[in-house]
Amino acid sequence: MKNIFTFLLILISTSILGQTKYELGYYIDQSGNKIEGEISEIRADKFPSEFYIKKDNQQIKMETKFVNEISYGAVYFVKKRFKFDPSVRYEIGNLDFNKNLNLVETEDFLQRLVDGQYTLYRYIHNGVASYFYQRGDNEITTLIYKKYRGKNYTINENNDFKVQLLHDVKNNKYNNLDDYFTLRYTQENLEDYFKEANGISFNRLKKQKVLFNFFVGYSMHTMDLNFLSNIDQKTHNGLTVMPELEFMFNRFAINPTSFYVNGKLHTFKSEFIEEYVRENWHHTVDYKSLYVSIGAKQYFMSSPNIQFYGKFGVGINNPIKYKINSPEEARRLRLIVLDRFAGGINTGLGAKLFNSILVEVNYDFVFNTLYINKNTALNFKIGYTF
Image 1 (cartoon, one colour):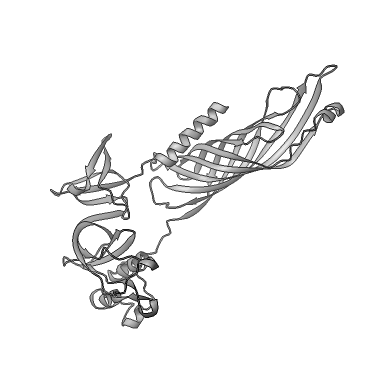
Image 2: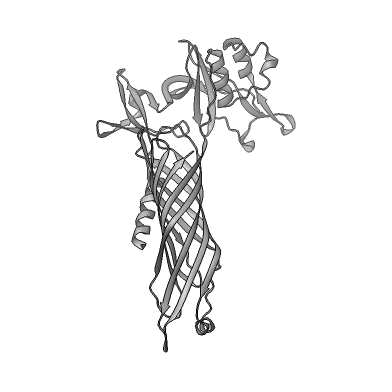
């Protein structure tokens, strides 16, 4: 059993912490050729100098300097010439007294947020996001926004981007400058504005999603108690139910990451026979506990009909029934108490079929207490996600 636990722990930790994320996408090279495949993760805040593409069972490394456009799932990056202020900082201690931007010209990849007659772009430098727009094939224009220090060290905002939008990017919901009072210089606000300006009707879908997973399973619960003499561990087998809540960060990702919290009832009933001088002692154990786990789940090797996942978390074991019947003489020599709370670890491997049916094997390891040398449960589960 220890070997199983070690194998699961290594496999799941490697899956969750060391996996490179891939999404379906493409890139366009400098000759205009479009190559489609699975693209390694591309992020605006940590744009890489190179990326990988999986195509025809091959993995190829590409340098971004030889590419003009990249699609990572539904995220698009295009190489453009534009102007921005690299000195802008939003930490209070780094604000200056100049309300104007000091624009410098550069060529780099911009994230295309909205495409259409009015195109919206984003660029992140040193953790600070700048936004740009383009009308048709005209040059890219910087949306002017800056936080700066005013007199008496007050914090002011240059919101000239609202004037730019009023004159250059017409939106029927905004008729005069006063209508822009609630518009913020944020990705969500600007995306909505540009979609409306382009006549795109949309409902903003939340990436996050809460799932309820309900399992029934077969549990093999093993315990080894600290009697006076060394007695072999015992295993109790039985059916159990296991509800679980799962919070998924981005349900649109091919291989999403999520947090989970679940609970299961550990049940153990068995008899231990301890050899003694005159006669054998018979110890009858009737033990139940509620084991609650919280941890992370990482999906991998996903396809339209099946998603594999690994999970790793920590737990707390809460005894709710801890009855042990022992001979009087045995109790006088050692009184065994099983009512102690204990921490533990939860690991598992599973698969989601057709986005609804769950098949999973997981392992609960409870840390030792004064009178419990071993407390583990191997669970074989099948469930449904709502």
